[in-house]
Length: 248
Image (cartoon, rainbow, N blue to C red; front, side):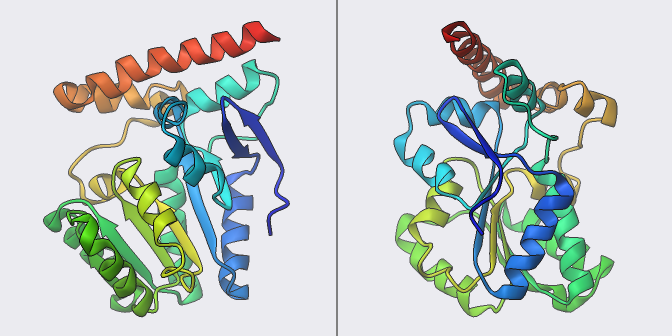
């Protein structure tokens, strides 16, 4: 299951898979009961991985690593290692929930505020069926509670686990408790996807997504909270790409 086509840029491994190929691999893993640990990388996460060794390790040791941000796709092309396409985490998440419904699987939702994760669970129960939700929990807990929560997820019988907690907390949670979660066939960090599904935040128009400006749309919604992540983080990412390009 590990021989997926991949590239290596800026200390990050990225699998060169399309959305369709990624969905097929997840479906296969669930049917064969082989756990697949999925993660996406964007410009901000790759910048953080340069200094955060634990984050770098948890990302690069994942089974599937997709390029979430359009900036990463462009960077790969600039560095002579083109990717097939961007596989946005929110799009993959929605496609996987639909697939779970079609194949009779259940999901566990972990993360966000209580009212947000509750709304997401209700949305999917109404859209699909009540049994699609094996369980859900908000993302506010202490390190001492982590093992108990991982055990709760494992006992829920869910085939898919989606974790909507900020980086690097979610990556480290999934990596540190991988043994407890070994019987959950598919595990994925989904960042702020619950906020989008619940309607708390809006997704950028398609033309902005295609133009690589989704980050800017997000910044406009919460400038005080997002300015450092996007303006500073994106500048650092551009510098890393240019520096790598000049080495060639």
